[in-house]
Image (cartoon, rainbow, N blue to C red; front, side, top):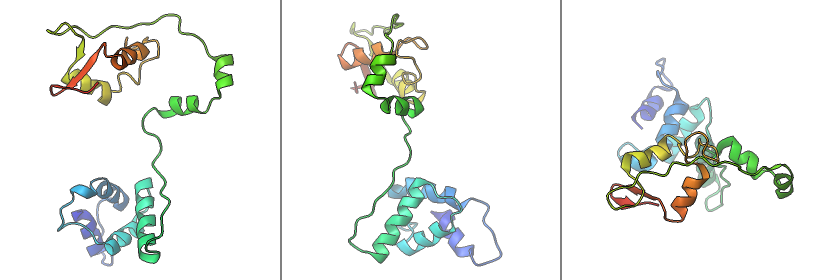
Length: 177
């Protein structure tokens, strides 16, 4: 927010800022609810900064469209375009676009499953605790594995056991399965 205010302050001077305005604006929009009231930009200031952006991310385009509509057409809805898929990626998108008939005709059955069940804890139940649980999400351990578990010995079988309450995911002492 401070950098964006500085950008506005020097925009008509010979001084140039050393950061990319679109990068700072995207960061500002992603943290908007955490920006202190004294640093928040007004709607007009935001519009000015948005016009200074050289590149427009989906969040910048949406914010620009929203601010223009609220200024020019108050009370009228705005169609916002979400950012591209982040989770699942290309394999999921490709699979979602295939027809059922194509999958039946060209799909193959899993013939061998590689699965290593998480170790038993003191209660005698398999738990994935704290650091290992976060690793599943942050390092995409399950997502990067093959369905059969070839890469990381998790795959479909791990997800199935979590779904059936045979393996438990705990974070900070709470069951998040």
